[in-house]
Image (cartoon, rainbow, N blue to C red; front, top):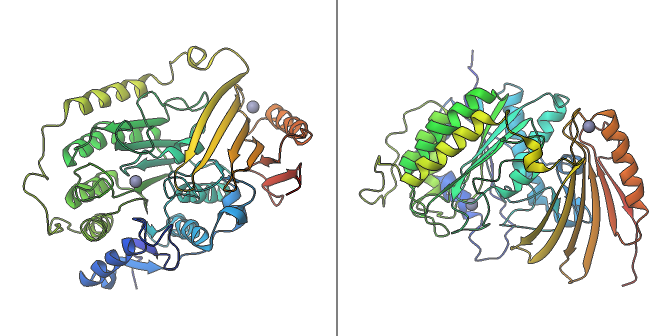
Length: 451
Ligand SMILES: [Zn+2]
Ligand SMILES: [Zn+2]
């Protein structure tokens, strides 16, 4: 009898899609990896099996995003396959077809936030979040997930989506935002009133290597995961922290990455960034796949590995201090006086300016979260953005959380009705992840402004 494969691979290089012909986020990112897997004979091993990616539906996207004006307007077929292929990988593990899975797809997703006016940091659709919400829906919301994002860039999109969600723990380990896009992901970003301490950011100084990364995993990530006990562990596996990456200043090696995979033991790995197409991706991905399959990865070595890059320590002192700070936050997260942080009112309000660097769009957001003792609270978001024709677009969205209480449901419905009557808004959306067959995003077009 054939044994079930340990690792399912879902590939999608998006041959005919690119931001620009010479852009670093291009199809060769995956083609060299594929060649390397063939050369190493990995695809012939019974432990590893390849699967074809599915295509995400509009409903899959709308469980996560408010796309302005619509899913069709911001998504290409490549975005739908990257998200759909990530769902395929999630399904493999969820259904028990494979023990673990690795989605090697593009375009990536972790900079895509809840509201989508366009593309930020090469991302339009948050592929991890689309997969998480798909699986959550299958379990009627009774599903807890941990996302450990190790891309060199702060996972600001995933953080935004799960910022106030008590059932998703989000840990991002990245190059310090003072030195790299998107300029966020600091120690004090710890989550919203219903999920305080469930967003953890570990900014690493430029030049950090395997010693720092593995220290954070062993001292912080593993104990936190042990406490949180998620149903699923996802590694958002950006490989732009590699010592050869042209966009960043980190020193991670393929051996360091494979060891991280072994320690973390993720159910799912999803490729995010990584722009060292020949020098890093083929080796890092082979290391990850071997580690996922429980095979020996110690022979994986980059051809240009400089002496000393793989040093074992000592760990940078500032990293040790940051880990100690976050260990304490985690240990005391349930005793914290939330009113001191979020105020004593019925709502917590935050205002932000966001920039979509890929599409050159500016957005202003004003968000209110209901502070509710019976659920994680409904949210109201106003967003004003300049679209590609430099015309302002004003929208509002009302978001219900999973397991919303009856009071929040009623208040959210009333808020939507009020907003839908505001003449200054172009679109008004209502998002309810628990909704059955009804449209997940209701749209009220307020204006068909001439020309
Ligand atoms: Zn990145
Ligand atoms: Zn409530």
